Length: 195
Image (tube, rainbow, N blue to C red; front, side, top):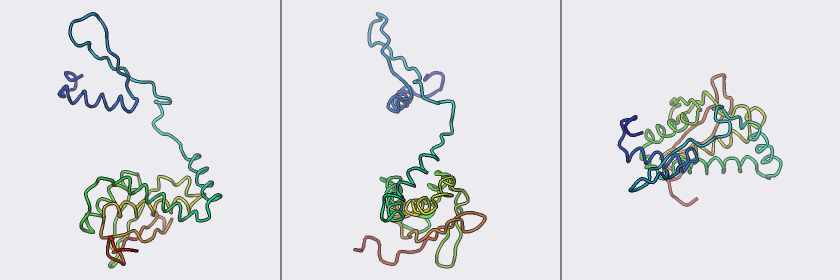
């Protein structure tokens, strides 16, 4: 593989180890009576439904959103907390964003990776992030309060984890034909100050 790809054997070995850890390849020792260390043989692991790149989790998400709504006294608060935890997890170990510009740039990059197609605009002292696409639209159409609260919490967790000098204050779902609008502002109290 190193010869075919032009990569160093250690680099190939690293990637094969990662693929094995993810369950995508299987490693076997080839025993052939040769002297020295026996060679390793890697084969692709069978992946269920590997031909289908699109996985539809919409129905499961609807069921879970309904469960949150039915069983929780504060479903919106729980959805925000869950989104916040997700955001914190996504930036765990990332460098902090010392400026508002750095924070918003990182926020937009992560939201773009998650397929929200964000655009930033200034609204006086505050900033607005337009979400031109919702990767959870199918579920948001029937469980808007849950999905949009997870999204708001996600942005809050991302910015909190970056120790950003900006917070996600509110999200206006389906604010217009172009998408949802998230409003960012400077925190009303200093970061790391007791609540």
